[in-house]
Image (cartoon, rainbow, N blue to C red; front, side, top):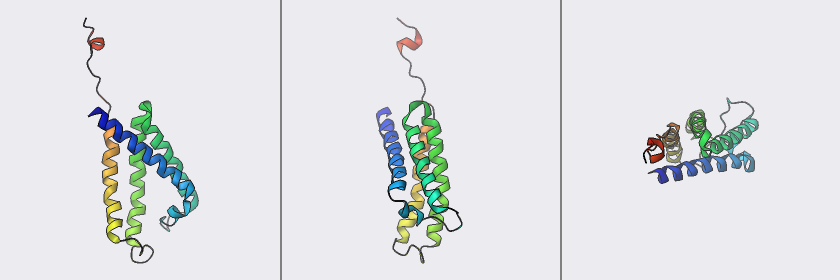
Length: 135
């Protein structure tokens, strides 16, 4: 199970890092999704890209894994506003995206949150000869 958890931690961390990098490579993609009530769309896209890279990296570093996981959860909670707004504007601004895909994106946020939450737990120490002082 430890190998699976490590692989999933790496996958989530790398996914966040790559998504963050994509904010710099393709900012127009993200600014289009920004709700009109959020100011400074481009700056917010860049800021969210930086924070995605940061929390994804923190997840991969053992000493900052828990903080990174909580940062990912916070990030995903903030993104609910974007997903809900996109659903509200599905018939006008996002006609090219199937409504089922928008609902799927929103629902998948819960999967990502649960996935990240798994890494907020500290691992128990494994009993070994060294820890029990047995010879």
